[in-house]
Every structure is written in structure tokens, then in C-alpha cells.
Length: 406
Image (cartoon, rainbow, N blue to C red; front, side, top):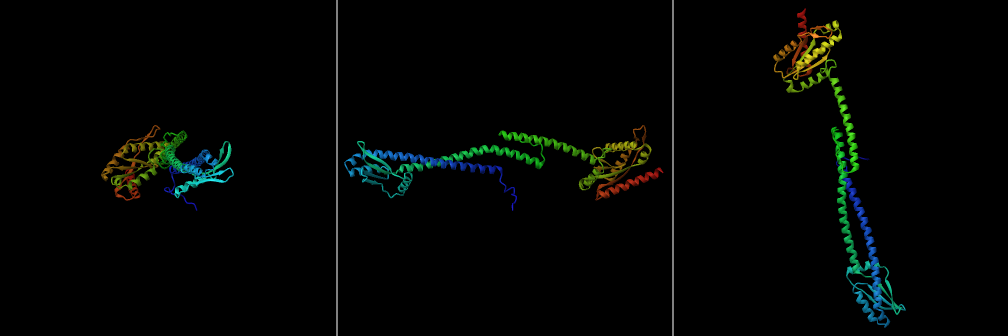
């Protein structure tokens, strides 16, 4: 059953590329080392074979006289003199009747010499044979079995030097390859960082920097072009969202924040103990607004509502926030309130703002006043209780005004 790897277990591209790089370099250098070793050994074998044949030719001339005069002692001494120089391991001289005439063999108990003999037998599985001539006539032959300690030593020295060079070349190749791969890793890292930032933080203004590698540079340019389109799309979408939020949270007729916005603000206020301790709510309802609609029409009523909203917004300024709750109902959230007397004074000042008649844009004007109720936020625990208290005081004021007029 497959399981997803965690982030800590999943190898990075840089680590994977480094492993692939090291593996490919090691495999390549190993193959090169093996190939060079084979070529070197074959070349040395050919060289040693030629050298053994040359030694046999030289020895055939040296032993010619001894073979002609049948002097076995002189022949053996000649073989021993050259054999002790390490030119061969065994030498056999035969006369023209193929009878053994002289024999010499190199004997040593040293393990290194026995190992050299093993290498010599591997390089030269068959003895080298050279004829012995006198006046152009073959009078015998020499058979030499190779023993060349210098060749064996040279083989090991060559392999050691070759191995050292291969290791040095491998290290240099890895350093150069790592330097070249760094551009690839850095380019991919830059692209990955930008893509992650865009996906995680929605930072569409982020861009991939210019890259040194041409292919990655073109990819970065295309990626940046895509980010430009996404950024424009994001801005357009944000503007549409802001417009929808403006429409959802504001009254389309007066432009004031609507009931939904009022609910958000009042709940936020009641949950903020600091702001709650110095705030108040004004609840307002238009007086005789139905009469204006019935008498002058809904268009005139709309102008009255728009003018009411303008006066409330101008009165609130930057300190207080006005809302239209629906119909001819409005509300204002007051801030920096110290006591109830301050609220009552503000209510009086607000009433004065509606002393002047409303222009209905039809050649007529009409008086329009507001019944105002209030409640202090620090005297209530919930928004519902605050609204209920302000609503009661507002209708109490409206009923008192109605009795006064009647």
C-alpha cells in the first residue's frame, strides 16, 4: 500500500541532481579506468613480448660459439649472467637435434618474485623461441620463459598513477559539474520560491529574476507574463469584489451603510470593551414621511431621504457613523461619549439640523423632522438589548410629539 512521503522524507531536486551527478561521474570514470587499465596492460604485454624476443635474439648470438664448440659450461654461464639481471625466468638451449644442451632457471623464495613470475606467466603463456645460426645455418634454438620484475613493477606503478589521476579527474569533474548544476538549481529554486509565494500568500506582484541559462530565462519571462495576467485578473476580481461589498453594505439610494453593515458594526462594538465604554446609539425615525409620499409622490420622498442622509453624514463627520436601516429609519453610532448628558446635547444639536425644510426638487419644500431615541452601550450586555432600549426611547419621543401636535 503506497503512502505519501512527508516533506522531511521527500528528497529535494538539488539533492537528487547531486546524487545523479555523482553516480554518473563515478560510473563514467570507473569505465574509463577499466578501459585504460586494459589498454595499458595490453600495450605493456606487447612491449614485454618484443623485449623478450629481442633478448632471445641477443642471447642467440652470445651463445653461438658455445653451441658450435659444444661448451655447455660456457653456455650455462652466459645464460646465468643475463638471467640474473632479471631478463627471463628460465632459459633452455637445444642443439640442432633438439637435445637439451644448456639449462638455467631463476630460483627465489621471495613471495614477491613468485608473484612476479605469476604475472609473467600470465602475460607470456608460451616461451619465446629464437633460432641459433652459424654461417646462415640453424645449429640450435633458445627458449626463454619470461620473468621481468621491472615490467611487473611498472604495471603496478602505472595502475597506481592511473588510479590517482582518475580520482583527481573525478574530483575536478564533480566540482565543475556542481558549479554548472548550481545555475540550474538556482533557476529552479527561484521559480519554485515565486510559485510558492504566489500560491501561499497570493503575492501576484512577485516576479522571477533574470536567469543566466537561456532556456530558464525564456521560461522565467513566460512565467512572469503569466503572473502579469494573473495580477491584472486578481486586481479586476478584487475591484469587482469591492464593488459587490460596497453594494451589499450600502444603501443604493442614499449611499449610507445599510442594515447589514450596521449589524456588523454594532456587534463589533459590543465585543470591544474599550470602545463599548465610550459609545452610544441613536435610533431615528422620520415624522410624517408617509404623508410626504402620499402627497408629493415617491420621487419627492426619495429626495427627502437623500437630503436626510446628507445631513446625518455631515453631522457625524469622521467621528460618528450614520446608517440607513430601511424606509425612513436611520441610526448613528456615537463615539467618545462620556455620559448621558452629552448624548442628550448631541440629540438636540442633531434636531437643529432638521429645522430647515427639505427641498423635494419639484418646486416645493416640506418640513421633515426625526424622532430620536438613544441608549448607552456601557449599560447593556448585548446588541439586542441596546437596540431595544434605543427603540423604546425613540417611540416614546414620537408619541410625545404626536400628543403635542394633537
